[in-house]
Amino acid sequence: MSSSSAHSGPSTTRNSSEGHPPERAYLYWDRLPSIKILRPPKGKFSPKVDERCFTYCSQSIRGRINQSDPWCRTVCIRHIFAHEVNRALAVHNSRDTPAVTVETVHVKYPLPPEGQPQHTSAWFEGILGRPSDEQKEEGEKERETERARHWDEGRYLWFSKSRWAAQEKIDLMMCDLERQAEWQKFKEQSNEDWAHQTQRRDSQQGGEAVSGSRSELPPAEQPASVPLKRPYPDVVGQSVLLPLPPPFPPLGGQIENLLAPTYKVLGIVQESIRSGAQGELAARIWEKAQTDEPFRLTRRNNRWV
Image 1: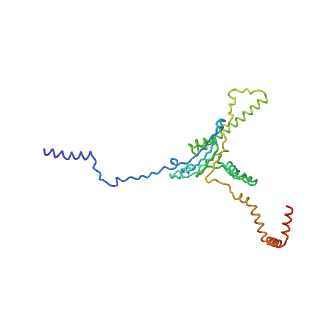
Image 2 (image 1 turned 30 degrees about the vertical axis):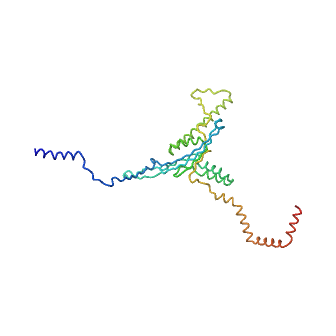
Image 3 (image 1 turned 60 degrees about the vertical axis):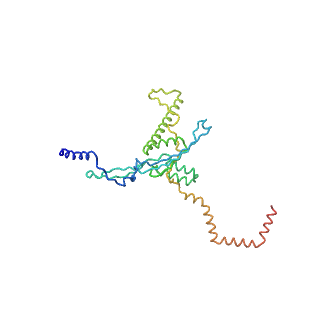
């Protein structure tokens, strides 16, 4: 009995030790709240906001009856980050060495038409006034030499008075710069095709009117029906895209033209003081003031009145 009880004791303790882990020593700092540092992802997966748009539209009773477009104003602030206009390229130095060099290349995505210099210059002219003929010629030369503008890292301000442009802007908030550029090319190509088809249709109709007979072409060669309106309306004149801060035209020339008469008058006065003409004039006025000529002149004027 004693031997069996002796053998059963160690086995029981072994099973209990294997089935339950040993108790952990109590630590006071286990009850303290833990601190976690979360770093949000950067680049394409960043949760940062890169564009905010504010749109206000109103409609009148008469405009609703006449089915007129509502009065709309839209303002958007777009933040272009570095990863949107830069691409990292891996370049192998040679075939033998596996070393790889990473180079950053700037990708040139063109700005939409409302951000090109031809449009922004006309927009500034409408605000600041029409320039003179000489300034207009210089501005036209600068526009010809200036190339197309592209997106760059920074902030941009977009303003529009068209509801069609506002709707398109909201749709383009789902697209990156590359897809936006593709969409712009697609619109331009569609409008060009529509213009060519319209011109071809008008020329065929003019030829039929002159000859007095209709062209008997097979159905496969008959021109397709061309819509009366262009596929995508031209709303460039109602929108503008400017980088922040905006590239205001140089005001030095305008200020110089404004103050040119003042400079001329001050120069004449300064020259008269140097030559002594102002002193002679003051002496003559003082001499005349001591005589009775001013009083006689005053009496004569009062008689005429």
